[in-house]
Image (cartoon, rainbow, N blue to C red; front, side, top):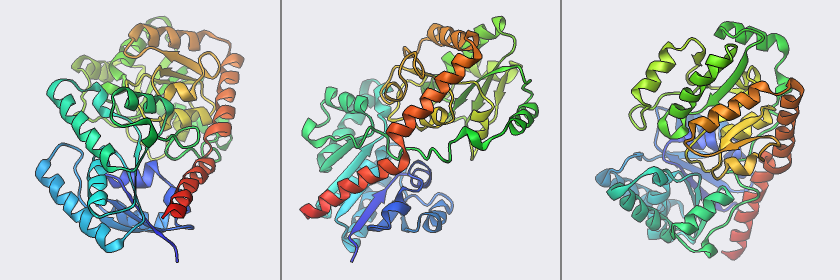
Length: 387
């Protein structure tokens, strides 16, 4: 009889998107249950696509003490009934609520994956509160998995927990990347020309692409300012923004929004279910984020053979090697973004292509999805032997 594992995220998009395929793989070896907020039916969709049982428990992403207590109680009741030998949580709120509930229910192995620390950009009383909550999560867990080595160092520096409780699986990343899916060979020249024409991009235009949430802590204010300056010199440059605004969480500056709306060479593609076509028509990724865990966007772009400009933060600087498969720049530095974009737009086409090919080769060797899954499975197997 298979042993039971419960995986918990705050919202179902994380189970279905960030961990896509992983739960289905693990269900071959364990009796798996996915728990998350209902999300308008997304959780049910996951039952068929990932071949796992799901249970909805509403959780908020904000600080809501009364609702959080209700969520902990519901999680506790489910865990007591299901009796898993592992509860494994992802995302900050699910981590806190899930680890508290699992400890109260007496689960022997309580695992939490850290894929970023939003609190690092907070200050004052809010930062103190978030630090306190983070320590509660870590104290209730038996193992903490930072998904990058740099993130592990930040956790230790902040004294959230001890080194003995921390472990980076494989070379980092929560789910790895399917390099057969993110493969530039799947898109031909005719496809690229057609999409470029649809977006108003000429064949000779140099396209810088950003994929992700259009918010302040992704570095969008600095990116737009840098591009505005660059485009005065390189008229054939385009900035392609692929992703949704989240003005209710982390709004952009008004002047940035105005620039995006009025600049003829900034193109907003919005949310896309499949970002590969947009990587395929682009020449370089620019990802000037303030903080990350292990950025899937950089893995995706690199696998699609794009050279990448990234911030010198954990995760990004573990995928990109400076001047090898991309450029690493300081955080929140508009001039550095401008300089690196100017460099990318000025070097020989063959050198740019070579840089992109190095990216794909490095990602295949270190972050292939099935390798990451096997490493997580080894963790589960080792814990099963301890039970």
